[in-house]
Image (tube, rainbow, N blue to C red):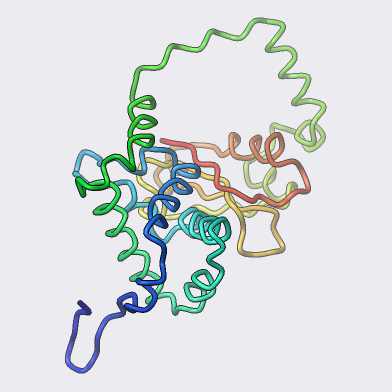
Length: 237
């Protein structure tokens, strides 16, 4: 039910839109969210809050919604969503989040639907074996690769701001609450088309002397210099 204040009523997804959304949409959408944020998006934190709550309204959430609509041939739903005012789209996201939590995570009738994702979550929680140290030859190979890359040409000793500028990346320090919980920095698509990508780093991480070299190297070696960032790469604190 919409929440009324005087003659004003908050947005809720209209019944005709709800009835037209396929019942498997929440499952497909949850899968796309897992591919971007990882299976912990379906887990609760120490405060009992699902990871979905921290993803709702982010660029990753929008990317997952877009991918789900395209793969399920629901362009009409994507057009509807994109036509909403920002404050209505936030409420749409919140209602969709509640639907995923109830039908996909908490409703007993849907328990069989999330077995695969719960398996992923359980696997991720298991202790990981410590990676062996790199050999001298492997370290030398990595250093050579770095020297031969565009970073070697620019100069790896430069500041993050100088490296980002040289690579046409927008580096922004944001409030700690503006990043998903536990994320120190991330490389993501830029809404400003004059940049190839956006690097966001949390204020606390930045003030503590943390660098964004990992995001810069991920751009060079994973995305490729001169290419636009198409997905989100997050680094946990």
